[in-house]
Image 1 (cartoon, rainbow, N blue to C red):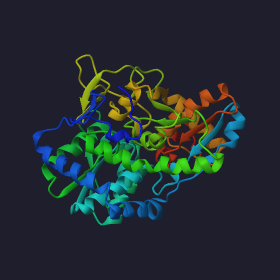
Image 2 (image 1 turned 135 degrees about the vertical axis):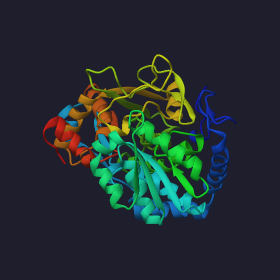
Image 3 (image 1 turned 90 degrees about the horizontal axis):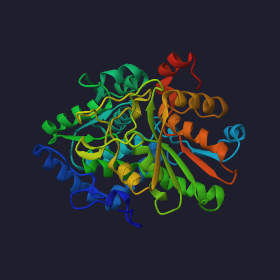
Length: 408
């Protein structure tokens, strides 16, 4: 099992939509087979449709705000010593996070499909916020499914979703977090697929949603390749790309265009509180393969094989599964995965926000935490780039409660 060169990673599946024969697939009820097949066929056409690609590029530039900045973190580099540290500041995109790419593409697809309604899931609130923004932009009525626990801890994004005219559907089952929001969103789509388009907020779920999301967020690395060449004249050898990983959408977008290079990929999961055995890091903790939201993947499970309880200070990483694409990258050893604790993420947020003119949300703070540990051990000829994929504004209440103050 290995990654094939010159073939997009999202297309490296077999006839059953399995990556490496083990991950992904479409484990869906019969009622979802036709809408999934219809969407799969439509997206296959749209990927080659010049008018659709022109529309995508237009809105990425004039609505999303591409390209987002690529900057050297001079103060952090000097403070730590060792490797040169850069950031791709994706949080400068319209709305404050990478989720806007996927949301925009899904709304364009919904319009092409003649759907008037669009629904989506959210954990940290960014996927929901971005989808509500894009729905408003494209004249679609929108529902956002969100766990009751996340509604309480991500208040700023909840308020933004409502201001954009979308309806928030609280999910009070299970852990009341992202995993349950995705489940309820899919259940709703089963009954309303004739009039409603569904946007899955990350690279999870049945294969078509993984493809759409990864294809959309690949804009991040398309920009970054050009920015790196402008900065260095070429892509430096063994470039080290650090990204947080929950469902895995920002990492897929960040790494996509570097698959054929010798760039090293570091995915950092949510290790949870130091004093707790709970986490949201299936790749780091040797979790077994299970089926979650229609796809086979490594997933946190209890002793009976049921979906296990997770815990993370970061709502966007608080998910028991992981994209089948990341499972594939782990098994082929193309990417390395580890985790950072809640406490390490908070410390990284403090240091980066104090030294630099960016303020990462708690999701990318996990990636910064690992980069901060590794950078001093490397030579100045090494280049580290961290995807600062979200802004900390949404986490200000959590940060204040944990640290007593909030740095913006």
